[in-house]
Amino acid sequence: MKIAVAGKGGAGKTFVAAGFARLYAGMGYQVYAVDAEPGGSLGPELGLSRHEIDAVRPIMVMREFIDDRRGDGALYLMNPNVGGAADQFSADAGGVRFLKMADIKPAGSSCYCEEHGFLLALMNSLLLGERDVVILDMGAGVEHLARGTCRGADLMLVVTEATRAGVEMARAIRALSAGLGIGQVLVVANKIHSEKEELFIRANFHRVELLGLLHESKEAADRAIGIGGRGSAGDPWMPEFEALYERLTSKEAT
Image 1 (spheres, rainbow, N blue to C red):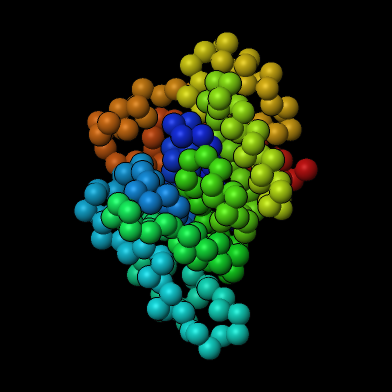
Image 2: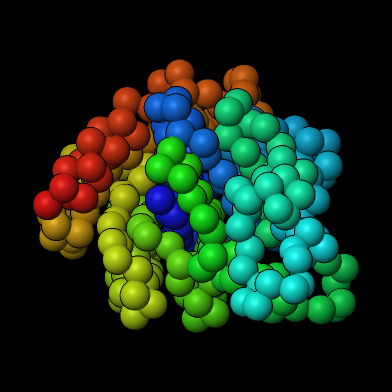
């Protein structure tokens, strides 16, 4: 499965992406977690140090491992014919293979059009085994959807807070994702503090489109400012992710 995670800035999409990455890894899947935002925070959320993240080469460099003689230039991350790219362009984060789209470029140097195009080609041509999962932590907002970067995803998880701005952005992302032909688009409400906020979310999203809720976690907030150890499948908020997974598999079955 290829899962893209999107949302308004600050909604917690990286937290959700990392949570699902750890969940699938803990279930025995080979998980590839891709930070699709230059200078993004998926690496730290997975427990990697800045040194470990900086040592990972961006997947743009992966092109040198692709055999240009192939007619369609298809890119197969797990195919040994491309020089073990999955291992050479990733770091191990507690059983999750972390990859990054690009590093931050110098101010005024260039855009990230080429990187987005390469990531789109990669996602559209990945050859996955039954126990492989790719999770894309997209940039905040809708630019990646306008570019079509996540067109090859099987599932789009739209992360929102219990705010009007978050709900409006989530609705826009849902509509754009459907326009890209992504088969399943579901909403995850994050950082829920109260029953009032839960009611607000349930009033704005039909139960068919709402995967579930994640409540505010003091431990997760501490982790975000560097207090606590590296992330793991034993984090106290993981039972809520397990409940989301159960609902997801139930929705897939229907």
